[in-house]
Image 1 (cartoon, rainbow, N blue to C red):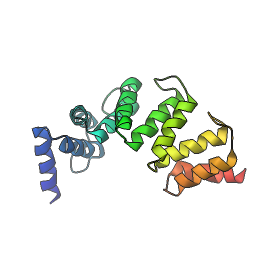
Image 2: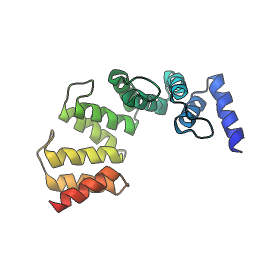
Image 3: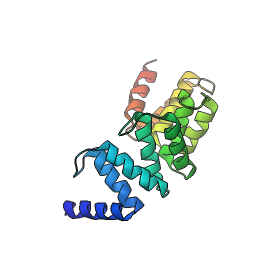
Image 4: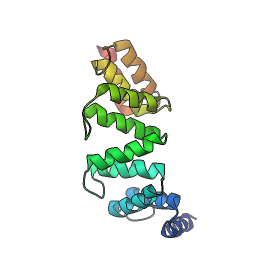
Length: 174
C-alpha cells in the first residue's frame, strides 16, 4: 500500500502536480520510503513553490534558513517565509517574526517581530506564543511583564512546545 502511494506521489511530481512534488520532497527530507536526499527535496520544493504551494514555500524557506540541501541564504529564506505568511500560513508568520526578532537579513525590529508573532498566534502557533512570552519576559519591544510572559508561555506549553515548557518552569522559579 505504502509503495503504491509513493509511486503515485512520484508520478504526480513528474507530471508537475505541486502537492505531489511537496509530498515527495517531504519524503526525501525525512527518508520516508526513500533514501534521505535534501538536495532532491529542495529541487522538488522549488518546483512546488513556483506553483504557489504555501507549505512548499515555507519548507523551502527552512532549507535555505538552515542549509538543508542548499547553502544558507537568509534573504531567500526570509522571502519564502514572507510569501507563505502573506498567504496566511501561521508558521511562515512566526518565522518572519523570528527574522525581525533576531535581525536576520532584515534590521532587528522587536515591534515588527511582535506584530508577526501576534498574527501567527491568532492561528494558535505555539512557537509564536513562546516568542511572545520571551518578549514580555525580557521587555523586547514591550514593557517587561512577568504575568503576560507566563500567560504566553502557558498557552504555548499547553500545546507541548518544549521551549515554552522550560521557560515556564524557569520563570515560575523566579
